[in-house]
Amino acid sequence: MKEWLLKTEDGKYHYYRDDMDCCPKYVEKIEIPEDAIEARLNVSGGINFVNDKNCFMNTVTNGRWVKYTSINSKNADKLVWDRKAHQTGDDSVVGADFFTEKKHSHYFKDVSNLLEIDVYRVLKLFDVTDPCIQHAVKKLLCAGGRGVKDVDKDVHEAIDSLLRYEEMRKEDEVNS
Image 1: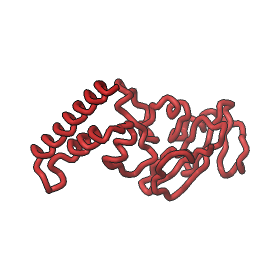
Image 2 (image 1 turned 180 degrees about the vertical axis):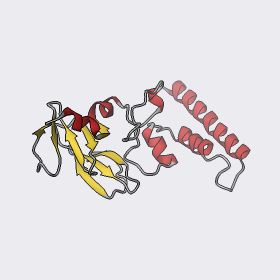
Image 3 (image 1 turned 30 degrees about the vertical axis):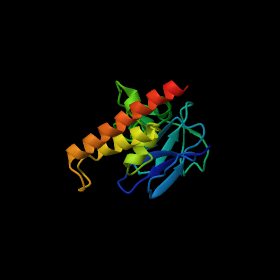
């Protein structure tokens, strides 16, 4: 499976894999080499990929790993992606401050490959499959914001959906 760094118009880099649902709009797409453990933005604006053998790869090296002559040049480059952080889920956004410890990590989802998010994407990311709960969440997230109903009306309709959810669960228990 191929992995990419996508540079968006705002200059940020976003991680993307071929199997991801959505790809942000980008101005540059850079394939991440299989052995890369980091991507660093060098002083000339290019990306240096680094492996665990103190080697780097960029467009100048034509896809070959080259030993760093000075470890200082590696440290001077700005980190824009880190494989270990991505694998452990620590990077919600690729960039300078993407190492954040999350106390309740199950509340966070990686959306670095998205430019926008809507109610339906939230439901999918959190695997909300029951239609009653989906309806209630949608009502609560947009309560009073659609211009049709006020906050109280939307909240009451969300409560009605959740009560129906409970009724259906009880019916299912009785019928099983």
